Every structure is written in C-alpha cells, then in structure tokens.
Image (cartoon, rainbow, N blue to C red):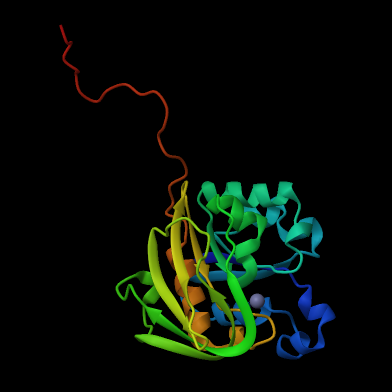
Length: 246
Ligand code: ZN
C-alpha cells in the first residue's frame, strides 16, 4: 500500500438511483469521480467509497477505524442517517479524523452537530455561473489554485449562511444572480478539522471539474489528522513552584 491518507468518500447515493439526469452525469455514483481522482494523487494511500445504503450506513467501526479523512455528500436523505451514526462520526472528528463536507452536506446531522448552528442558507436552482475567489492565497487549501475559477452552471447558495465564523475562510463565491457565499471554510473541532466546500449540485457535472477536485484534495490534506491522539486536560500540577500568597 502507498504511504499517505486513507480516505473514505461517503456518498448518500440516492439521487443517482432515482433521477435519470443525475445518473447520466454520475453513472457509477457521485463518489466515483472524486475517488478516482484522489486515488491517483501523492499522499493518498487508499480511497474507498461508502454509501448510505451500505451495511451500517457506510460508517461501521471498521470503516471509521481505517479512515484518516472522510468526505461527506448528502442531500435528500439526511434524516435517514441515524442520530447514533451521526454522533459516532462526529466523535471521530473530535478525536482527530479529518472531514470534508461537500455542498448539500451543509444540512447533514453531522455538519450541523459539529457547527452548533442552523447551517441554513439561500438557494436557487437556475443553472447560473459561479465565480469562486481565493481570499486566502497562502492557505494550504488554495495551493495551486488560480486567483479565481468559474463554474458555468451551478445551483446558487447565498448568504446568510448560518455557520459559526470560520477559523479560516479560503474561498468566496459570487453568482451571476448577484449573491455571494462563503464557499471554502475551515474549522478546528476538538482534535479534528472540518473543511466545507460548496460546489456539487447533483444535476451539474461539478465533480468532473478538475479544479473542484483539486480543492477537495487540498481540503482533505489540510484536514488530515495531526497525529495527536489526546490533549492534556483536567486538573494538573503546576510546572513551576507557585509562590504562596500571604
Ligand atoms: Zn444542491
């Protein structure tokens, strides 16, 4: 096996099975082009696709035990992910597993649980142009990206996006209809890191776009576990003698 990150591309896998237009774009599921792209890159040891319909909703202990970074795409079946499974994956993130949340994953139990806010936003499905601006060009997620890049047809997501202020904001989107959106956001949670990346509406071939895929790759490398398994917390002895106050 190659050295590097063990990646699980978690995909809801519902639209592809019931919507012909989506199946035409993603005949082998939305996770497939992401997994195929990542598998070829340096620093990636393995890539597996896990789906909601798989055993244990694709988040069994066996899968989580062998995942360094997980990507998460969900939309119409957020409610079908059990509370217990959402909580288990959330705990893995707090314990250090990296998480890259894609597009409609903003409304997943997992993302909302990690953010602690409503995570709602404006949206419009008009197939409009999106221009994504890099606003933190020295950030690892921006490595190799141009000043901006464009997607010709997208679903709009607009502010206000009900998230906690990102620890780092890397990308801002502008849409043809006039709205803007924080589309590449980084947070630290416990020992783990979360990257949210906006593009990925199922009826457009967004995950066939190599710049989009590059951002996912950069995001999951940024979110990779630091190696720290436990932080020192709780009651501790002082490192120095503390002078007794009279
Ligand atoms: Zn969408």
